[in-house]
Image (cartoon, one colour):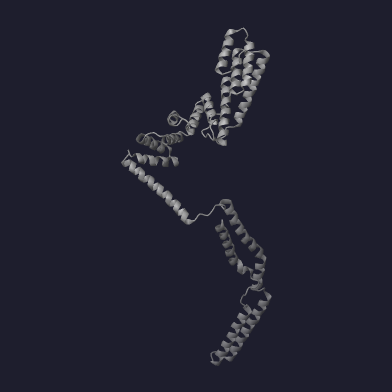
Length: 387
């Protein structure tokens, strides 16, 4: 920022010195009359000199003097009849001073505005030595990578080489190379928690965030080494959701919520996912036809409270409320009672689920087959209320 301020000041100073002569109040120009008089006097002296040397006659000299005198008088009359160069120059300069000032100020303001618009005035300065060191560090990393790669081509079974190069590939987001490097490192050095976790991360990046069977298998091996590994538990749960295993995904997210030290942002994200999954299950179980069910984004950190999902949520709650009123007023078949019990259970409204269960028992009083089905559903959903 300071550099550009200095540049603006220098531009203003340069313009000032360029136009400075235009601001002089007096322009010194040679007097034409004095010049012509001096010339004619010199001519008269030459005539006298020619007469003395007898180069011309006396009569011719007199005629020449008369002609020179006539020219002198004529030039004097023309001088006073026309405006002087000085007056013309002063008039021109006086009329353009305003425009000169405006142009000078405009150039400075224009250049400064362009910089403020396109430049980065808030960028902090960086010493040349520091910039040089940064560039040298990058060049050295590139050189070291090339050396390690060359060494691995000569000795592909070097266990330390693969352990060194794999994290570098991952940090540079070269996921395919990182996958291969971690695979070789695991083959040569054996499995441990860190290698498997990074191997899964590289495979996940190569798949664009999709928890494939290969990624899930790697994370399962991590769980085998550390059952409480957060990343493995989280991505396995995301995998369940991506493959529409909603109940398993909800169980996984609930386990994550039970962890100590979970950040507020992660807690909000997991809570939102549980809410979305509950309504997905409702849409499936209540047979609501809709193509607006929000699926899991590849970017897990992105908020999923979209307007489409909110519309789906309102529609689902309306359908549940309407079904409950219909069953209470007119009754219904076994399938409708089961749907309403499941809906309240999925929403976590266990009290309402129990109330509907009791209402269904009264509705099917004396019908053993229907009552047996309702009781089986109660046991399945852990609704332990006896009639």
